[in-house]
Image (cartoon, rainbow, N blue to C red; front, side, top):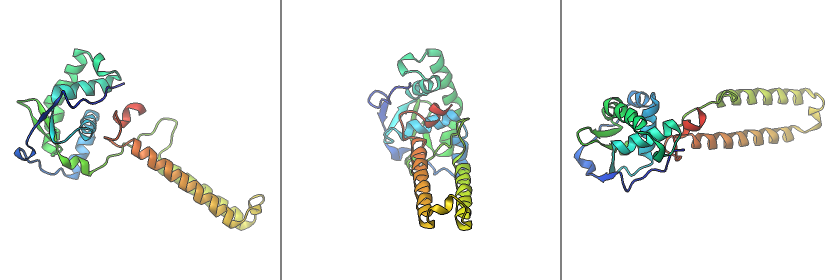
Length: 202
């Protein structure tokens, strides 16, 4: 399991006004989110102080720990180097161009932009034994419609409960489903938990 983020040993204070970052477009954000490592970078940045810079080595080490499901202390030099190289040569330059962060390649420093705090990204992850929420609500609506039709037709045993009673049951079921959906969405939002939300849903 990945270790907690450390700010005291990896952060370097910088003047945020020195390098203004253009606001990312919707296409830019989709491009960033299309890659797992870039999502990990975004998750890391959303959990750090955006007024400070992060060393690429520290970031690579944490991402390597997440990818290999180990603590930071157990990350091998090979695992760290693999992530470091990919970040330096590909992912960070792309995220810099998208306006999500500023990457100082010569100094090996990354600085997130406050714009990333203005949007919440929930990873819609569905295990093989689960169904998407959209299909769940469609199925639930179909069941409720059939139930109301049975009550309206006076079918036994549904007719033994009043229409108000069934309406109350339906309201409760949808309310509980909405609460469960909200909780699931929040726990799967990038930057909210210690580890990226998709790690536990591989």
